[in-house]
Length: 138
Image 1: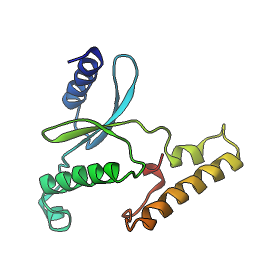
Image 2: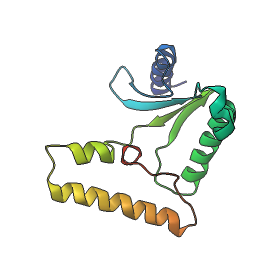
Image 3: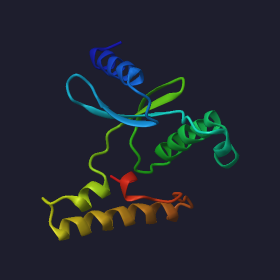
């Protein structure tokens, strides 16, 4: 394993030891940000809607791989293991951009327009995003 891979795996191991969060941001020792997604710990009643947590997680992971390989602008999965996968950080979310005091209204509008264009490209290749949220767009 190269030095970068060792550094990343060490940060992943630490993130997995932290208190449980289904989706959490973490950083390597050098400050490189990543996101870890884990199997949801939901009540059995939700399983009726989403399927079992393992099934829902596998569907999420497979969907992400499919979107990546289809050329959709989603962050790359940089590593994965049993019950988790790690995504590169894609930058500020549209929510953060729109709340920013340091950006002009014009810049915020440009970011929203770009997000709309990306969704339109998704739809043009017969894909749809379920319930798109500003917090999920970077």
